[in-house]
Length: 260
Image 1 (cartoon, helix red, strand yellow):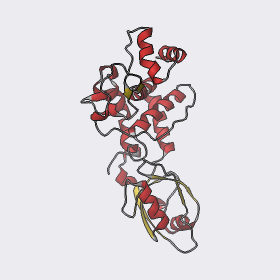
Image 2 (spheres, helix red, strand yellow):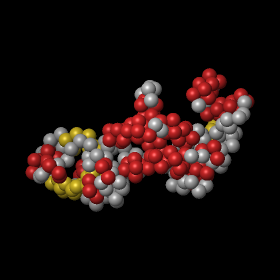
Image 3 (cartoon, one colour):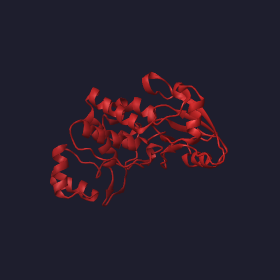
Image 4 (spheres, helix red, strand yellow):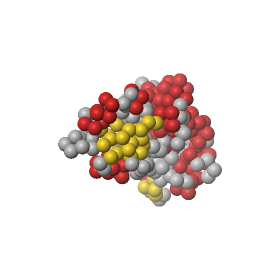
């Protein structure tokens, strides 16, 4: 892939290869962060063994380090479970890694975006509209699945979400192309962007839980904005109709509406 990465470089510029040959009694020496749904194995630490021996035998540009991510193991890409099995059980492991594809770099990029573009409120609105279609009342279903990124129909064409598929996603585009879907799903990125914006703007540091799966097309949108997202010109009965099925009580509705 040639997705844009740091300092204007492509992934091809930042990729490098490493070959680890297992020996009896010598550990692998790479701690990686495994998460279902992710397409890479971020390197968390070099702990000796084969990885340390590799680093000592090759020039600096080919040394593995914390913050790199494994994107291929013995010809397997995208399937992190199979990639991990290769690392555990194969005698020779051919790895392809990429520099700077890690959570810390992602958060740093989001912080810079919010500070330089002043787009914190827009990131929060994007995440809210993605998740806010959920309902457990007369209407059911709906979830944060980044269906908004399909502009032609479905949630991406809802009038109430005007500006989000264009302005918000355009601002996020350099970060999206760098990290999605390899390190993080679009839906998880939007949630992380909102929580990062809240912190950068002086609010609390809200932990982000990961695992949201992306919609593959607009067909995975909910049927309509009606009954799922609030109309700004409606009164208390409308707000209760929208938010009670989401689990909000009146106090939470007032807090959310006031912040909005």
